[in-house]
Image (cartoon, rainbow over all chains, first blue to last red; front, side, top):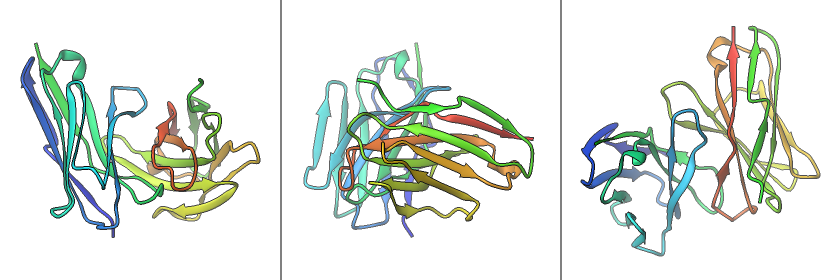
Length: 111
Length: 113
């Protein structure tokens, strides 16, 4: 069945450093890959997404890369700030169907 | 523009009871998705409704059911509650079938005692 693996499960970085979270998906039909940020007690918030016809997308300090051949996509956060501390989830879906989520990464930015 | 809303915010039930959770999508959105987020775990897909029809169902028992109303709001019903049903239930909406971007509501935290 469909599966999304996410690594690492926890990530601790110093303020100002970069953070990278990696995901691998199993369903080759997947064509949409969003990333959500969830702060404690809050709803998941979409921070960036990418579609299978694009290899890379950037929005200020956040970027996502997609390697369709390897079925692998990654989130890159540069110049991390304490407010970036949260749980980050990757997900994959096909044509508006259900999102299959990774297990999440707890990011801690130390000031 | 108002976001996805859910009610109630918290719900306490005892084992064997039934729970009803409600979701109102963003105006103009016709698809509603339900996910379960158990403590310490990721989000698991429950149900997808679009234009009043059930489009897909996750790997959950039949006692998890729902419906979508003509105004696109949705209801999730959980019958014969079990302790392990305690979780945050999140609703998301999108513009419709084939439109991928899903926006989440704040969730309903269900506690089964």
